[in-house]
Length: 276
Image (cartoon, rainbow, N blue to C red; front, side, top):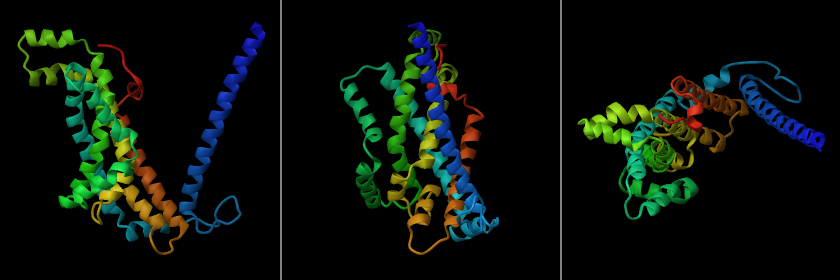
């Protein structure tokens, strides 16, 4: 019986590792194919392209105005991440620490933008922004992306806040700490792992947010992911290598943001943390 159980456990572990390795191998092969093709001249029925060149990247840089796209993407991502933190963290604190009528209904409302497909509420949202003359601007893109990211921060932060003993706050107030000082000196340092984790996930989500950005962006407020969509589906014939070059730039930009952020965030903090 024990031998059978041991064999079953080993077989299950082997199957999991085999599946994981197969998945990672396919993922690596897919990314490698895109990267190699973005430098290739011609690639037909051979293991490698006939030659290598960087002219597709020069074509993408000149044709799509890559420098302004990168600047707009950085502005949108930075603004959404900072604003989502400034709005979401105090709101999460209020939701975690205060009891009030309709609290469960409010939590349900926060969940809706995360559960409902973005196109469902993105079209009415874009209509409102166009009427307010905000759509087509960077400000409109930022506002649209805040709709799902602020609830995202709230839902991530609430478990972190619940882990903090309220008696710490009570003791600080006894010694005369007012609310601004309480937040600045005590709560923010305690919430820091949760805040950094939430903002990291908001950053990744905003870089890849296509639907809301597509519906509200204009010619001067497109992010990189929207420009990549137009490169694939816009009218005209474009070399496949130039589209792959655009995809590599998008992947590289996302990777740079992640590396910079992970310089300050421990990935284990995304899963959980120990009490203070």
